[in-house]
Each structure stands twice: as structure tokens, then as C-alpha cells.
Length: 145
Image: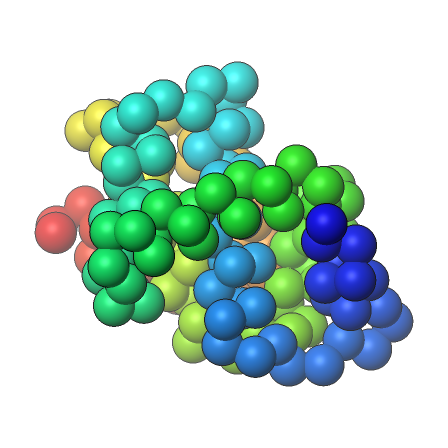
């Protein structure tokens, strides 16, 4: 279903993604991080829906539709390294920093910091080309918020 989208995303010189495609790819990355511990529970799903509604000004039905598409895309997407590097090449830096903020929102949804989540977000930040300083500031904003 997403073969053409993924081909465009992972070709040797990807173009900047249109807004709708970028938010789909970035939401799929949120799903991938949420699933990385082997669990994708209701709290994580609700957090991603809230992020989609807030960041993209979506209605509840539109946010649910985006999440459903993102789950399908995540299932078909290549390994995390290629997927995040492809997003890096196709999405503006400011949007990637906002994705790191969203990843921290998902990771901190249970009120605890977990070493494995820290490691995954650190890896995603690196692959997305987000500096350590910007990633740390993104985390701090979410811990305070």
C-alpha cells in the first residue's frame, strides 16, 4: 500500500516531503518508538493521538485515520536506521526537533524515564540529524511540561 511512498522516501536523493506525507512519516516514527519495547498499549496510542491532534490541528477522526495509516506504514517501512535517515533527508530540521519532543512525550507518558527509551530516542535523534543539545532541550521541555 505504501510502496511508492517508501520508494520516494528512501531513494538516493529524496525530495522534501509535502506536509501530509511528512506528518505521516513522522507519526509512523512515533509508532515505531512506541512499539520498540514490544508493547503498544492504549496509553501510548492515546498519547500519539493527542500529539497528532495538537501538532497538526486534527479532529479526533482525522487523528485516528492518521494513526491507522502510520501503523500500516510503520509495519511496511524498512529498518529504523534507513527509515529515520530517509526522514532526515526529506523533512526540515525544525520538524525533526519537534519529533524528538513528541518522542519524549510518548516515552514519558508513564511518568518514568527508562534507560532503554533514552537509548532509543538518542539513536533516533542521531539518525534524524538532531544535535545532542537540541535533543536534551527537547527532553527538558517535555519533563517540565
